[in-house]
Length: 80
Image 1 (cartoon, rainbow, N blue to C red):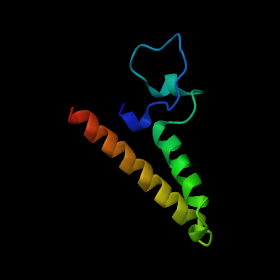
Image 2: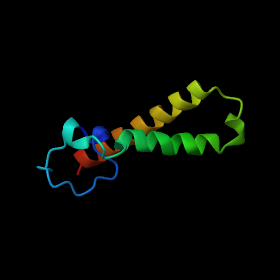
Image 3: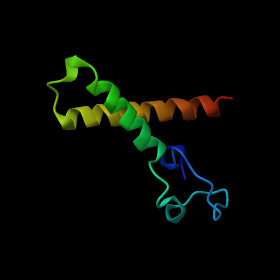
């Protein structure tokens, strides 16, 4: 499973074997991608310049920002 789909705030799961799978993630909250997109959306909505933007446009920008952050984190980790 790639980093974007891992839990943003995992809990101690007695069944965790070191590899997250879909069954283990049920009930464990947002993925990192969803969490980062929510934070990006919150920041965008706090900017008055975007107050007239459509919800779809704001959501699209938030997902793009989340994906960009995850790609940069992956590139940084790979470059170590």
